[in-house]
Image (cartoon, rainbow, N blue to C red; front, side, top):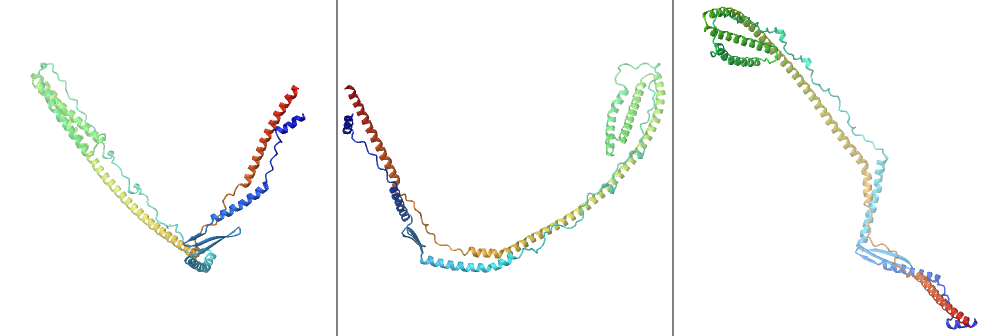
Length: 418
């Protein structure tokens, strides 16, 4: 197999040599130097000299140490010196004012002004509405004190059935009788009289449902009944006059008895009416007297109520005046307290104003800028170069190994054929 090795050296050549290791230390040193140069370049580019209407700002370097020099214009320099002088004077004046502040703060605050008003004094109690009982109670009139009105008078038992056995019968359907004619005229008169009587009772102060009113209506009803009875009798007389003489004699006899009873009945009724009218008159007088008494009670009560209201108005007025006086006093107390607090704080406020007014204002220049220029990536480039060389070496070794494998395969085939 010696010949195969010799042939391999002739055809393939020597194996590829491994690349040398990168100089990482040198790359780091070079990177540091590049960073320093980038910082210097950044400082030089970021901090120009400034020339403004208020002054100048220049930047100089001693090695790597920068020096910033600010120079004001003559006018700005003079203004600064005047401000400093004024500030010194204000500060000195404020220092002298501290003695007043020390005296004020060293003394505890005490307010000797008027006190707050909380009481309004004593006032008369408010009067309530007067009691109606102290002026007498209003009352009504008792009708029983004037006597009871008498009821209606018993009507007499009139004789209405006549002995007509000897009298010829009246013709049937002979037309309107005398009784019907009288009653037809009496009905409207009675109705009109009833309306007039009811109106008169109401005007007298009597109302339906009261005893006096009902008695008067009952009496009127009895009178109407009597009038109808009398009209009936008159009609009967007229009708009977047309009959025979015997009928007239019987009728005359019955009529005489009835007239006698009616005369007594009318007399009793008139007496009863006179008595009831006297009771009604006395009752009306009692009502009038009671009304006058009630009016006097109401007048006295109104006067008492007016007096209580006047007294309450006077108490309310006094209360309002006292309240206004207390409010005025409290307002004055608040004003006095505010003045005392202001007097205590005035020295301190003056010192603060003097100190705040002594601040010096300088012209504004641009601040010194740091470095921000990026240096060349030397260390990173060195690392990348090493990686590239290693990849190239790996590829060459692979290619060499493939060529060797091919030659060995070819040699093995030739040896087998021999």
